[in-house]
Length: 132
Image 1 (cartoon, rainbow, N blue to C red):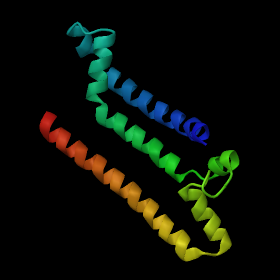
Image 2 (cartoon, helix red, strand yellow):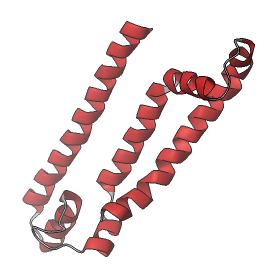
Image 3 (tube, rainbow, N blue to C red):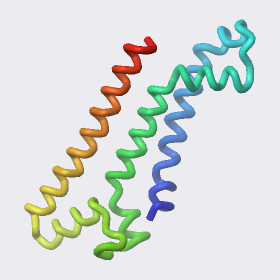
Image 4 (cartoon, rainbow, N blue to C red):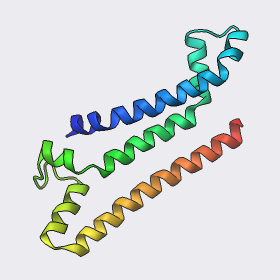
């Protein structure tokens, strides 16, 4: 199940990170070359400059992983106590007709995602105040 989730999430994160790095390189290439930064030094400078975009890419991948039901059911099944995750439990309980449990699990999942995004936003705001 972890491998399936990784296969689903890595292309999204890689594409978003590549685009952020490419956009930053187009913007800063001339300046970095004029300052004599090349190779590893230029790469580290770019990564530091786009760190918030990279965190956003990771959060997008996390959102994709948390919302995935199909790959988890296909690969791991829905074995109680072994391979059952929250999204597959929501799907199972909905199909069984236990809507209050499915809705409560859905609300918990949404609350977790909102809490993670709020924490990322607060960390970003604090870092921008500190580092500019």
